[in-house]
Amino acid sequence: MRVWVLGSGSGGNAVLLEAGESRVLVDCGFGVRTLAARLALAGIAPESIEACVITHEHTDHTKGASAAARRWGWTVHASRGTVAHAPDLAGTRVHAFDAGASLAFASLDVLTVRVPHDAAEPVGIVATARATGARATVCTDIGHVSEGVRALCRDADILVLESNHDEGMLRAGPYPPVVQARIAGDQGHLANRFAASLIRDSATTRLRHVVLAHLSENCNRPELARETVEREVKRTVYRGAVTTARQREVVGPFDVAGGVEPRQYSLAI
Image (cartoon, rainbow, N blue to C red; front, side):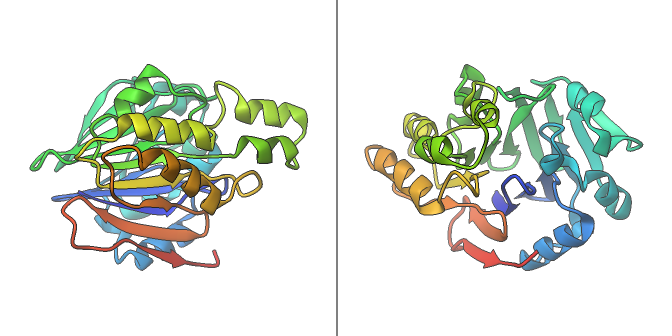
């Protein structure tokens, strides 16, 4: 099992999962030219991707999916609520599922779990490599740590988790009160301290990589998110690195088998 974060933030999100014969993209919030450039940094041909699973209908997760599927022959999968509320997916044949469904791909099984966010039927996913049992969790855009979120993060080998904002920076930031309330609300985005507590509670001896995702560019700093999480996880059995995924970088591969050091590739697109 290997994971690449091709970019994460309010400007676009995409996470690539690799296992055996499967390459599955979680979200496609970039146009095809941008996505192709980011995949090239990872040495991956877009047409080698089997499918794209969309977590919810917000544009930073959907805007490139239809065009990419047409160009490269992917299948697209999304919850029924997402399909009904995603203009970016209009005219695209989407395999619709109910949150909680399991999806089977060539070498990967993907379990979807309902998560708390201000979208129609948002999901997080845990992907399991059928041959090895390795598990990767992708859980972003979550307003609070529900039981479903806890279940997603339990027993992961690779954990990609939202650490969106610092609460003090959000209060002092540029957003009007109504937007601040939406971000900090139970259906908004996860603050650093809650991400840190969740990772602390989820860490087991099998956890190999922690990747913090969907960081706010206005109300967070990568070093602050990382330090907040590191203070908590040093009290656990986890001894790996805490990596921050950023909007204008490709980072990876995060490899369960080890032997490959993740790198960050900066770009100007």
